[in-house]
Length: 91
Image (tube, rainbow, N blue to C red; front, side, top):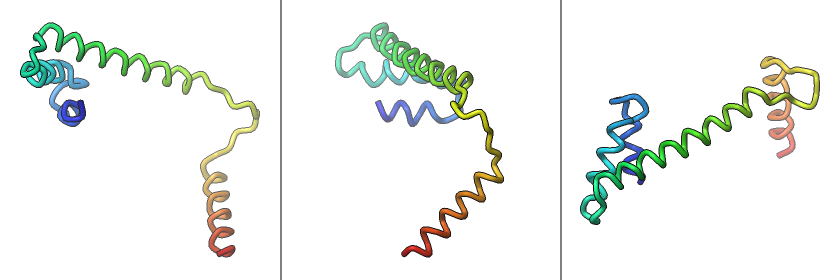
């Protein structure tokens, strides 16, 4: 639910825990969904999102490039500047 995502992004609580659940209960009540089921839906969505983020974080932490050379930020900026110059002059 986009409205829940927007409201829980406001730094009121840690990761929107508690706020998200109460919003789900409030927003799903008119559709006949009980408080326990609405809370379960909210917590399940949060856990799925968290597990997906953890998986991506593990890949980020343990990923090693196949090339053994490293590139520093200055070299990367110089290469980007050269490519931008090439693009400007080719037009």
